Image 1 (cartoon, helix red, strand yellow):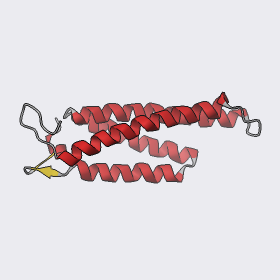
Image 2: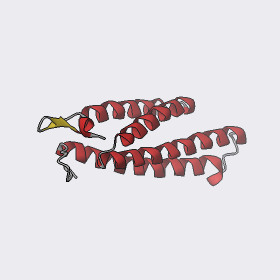
Image 3: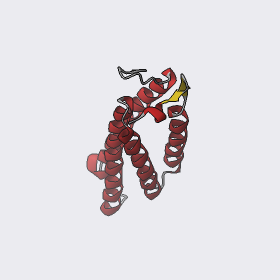
Image 4: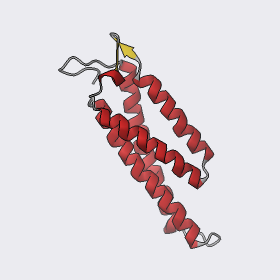
Length: 136
């Protein structure tokens, strides 16, 4: 995974980070789906009006869709495609706005930190080449 047949080479830590991000996003997908199920009728909460729980559930399901887009983006990055980076970055930015709508400050900080770390890691160099420079 650190290199391909055309001579592109990736820093080993970058490959590790991308795989770690893939696992994290898959776990996040499970969490979003579970929270959406719990908030929209999995366990009925009689103290919160249905319109609020449905809105929250729709926001969580939207985040789940964006996580799927992020997973696809990471897979494309692993396959040396620039569209993967664009998909991942776009879905992360939109997910920040959804986090603001849900009022989840910690989630917003985590996503923003993830963007910064990904930008740093994807620009790590091996043999004077970074992964970002080699995406096509």
